[in-house]
Amino acid sequence: MKNSKKWTALVLAAMMAASFTSCGGNSGSTGSTGGDASSAAASSEGSSEGSSEGSSEGGSEAVEAEELTLPLSEDTVTLTYFINTDGNASIVKTDYNDNEFFQELEKRTNVHIDWQMNSPADFQTNFNLMIASNQMTDIIYGAQYYTDGMDAGIDDGYFMDLTDLIPKYMPNYSALRNSEDRIRVATMTDSGRLPGVYLILTEPQGPWMGLQIRKDWLDKVGMDVPVTFDDWTNVLTAFKDQLGVYAPLSLNGNGFTDLGRAMMSGFNVDYTWQLTGDGSVAYGPSLDGWREYITQMHDWYAAGLIDPDFMSANSFMVDMTMVITGKTGAWCSMYTMPSLYESSSEDKEMNIVPVASPRKQAGDEIHIRMKTNDIGNPTAISANCKNPEIALKWLDYLYSEEGAMLANYGVEGDTYTLNDSGEPVFTDKVLNNPDYSFSQAQASFLCPPSSIPNHYDWTRELGSVPEKDVASYDVWGSVKDDWIMPSLSLTSDEAVERAGIMTDIQTYAQEQTTAMITGIQDVETYWDTYVETMKSMNLDRAVEITQAAYDRYLNR
Image (cartoon, rainbow, N blue to C red):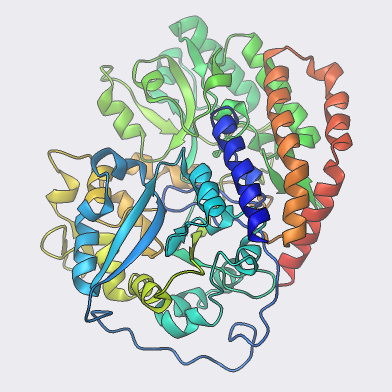
């Protein structure tokens, strides 16, 4: 079985290397369903099969947990770790062992980590190559990227089944994942297995990405913050005609893979799998709402209101140079960015505010946005790991009160102090470091967000964020996210079949979306052909597979 998996992984790696830039890294190509990449944590994705008979999670005899004591071993234990590097950390650190948090963690646990660090752009390709070569590290971030799903990764001999091991060696993590039913459900497969260890947020994090606009420009043209698409047409036209703005609106992800769902949410449509009004599963780019979205974007593109080079803007966030040089007036970005844009621009009047996604009519109900998250992606333990109990205990420490404080805030008296209420407050070493930005300082002295599972206090990000930018959560979260697809588990056979269908469909949908926005194809005359072509590529079967997985999710 492994030989065939190696061949599949090699082919996928080659495909990823060739297509990552043009495809924008769409998570749908992995065979997983649902989720966003969060500033603190990307929501969990994956597909799986198998059973968990006789496990403690399956309801049989409970496993007695071992007490966590430090150090974890009298002799230093070395573990290897495949990781996706944090963008801020990679600017200032090329090895996490240079990070002060990991240095302190090694002192406390007597566990040394040899890091195999990967940039976000190379991560999935390198993950597939690791599978193909069977050169597995002890700890592996991103288990959901295994082609056939996480249960298949266990059955194929790559990942360790943690169903009985987590309750025994991770009492802190187990208590947290069982504290909320939604977290318990999201961190297991349909079969009841525990395939990995998930980052768990101390409190849910709302949408951290959404639309932003130049409020100072709105004031100059005498307009209010736009609400409807008609309002937006008037505002963008004023930016172009009255202020001479090069690109009144910038689109992310080629106008397709927009994590913030900036303009598509107003049509209640997503760029990937989603739910509809009757609770059924659908592929967003095949719905009539997608036609409406494309039509609106085409009208704006034809009028010169959208960046003419949007099709090459495959980043998940607006190009910073476009913002700080005044070439664009509205875009999608993270809530932490406006203050950086403003301080980096020579235009000292720049005033950026969050704005809700537009509606067709004022008062329309929206069901699509970046979803609120409780957890991050899963980290697996390799089936070849010689010290799984040490690896799990090392991770579990980061879910203890002491370990989580170290991960989130560092060492008391150095990177934080306690205020009169007993709450941690960062010192100037983090808040006002002369060499690093606030985000870079967190990534240099603390546990970087996203890739290392821990009990993550995402609110630490708010330490240097102005109040007007923190308000982004309320603005973007003012609409519902109940049509966003939850993280589903597919069986191995389902994952293989659906991936075989959707790889080509997703490429086709993205290419034709660009063609219709730019006018190469007339959306009015081409739409039916576009949908029928996807159906001829077996879209209905992919919907059937995804619906079955969603039905199982509801019954977990």
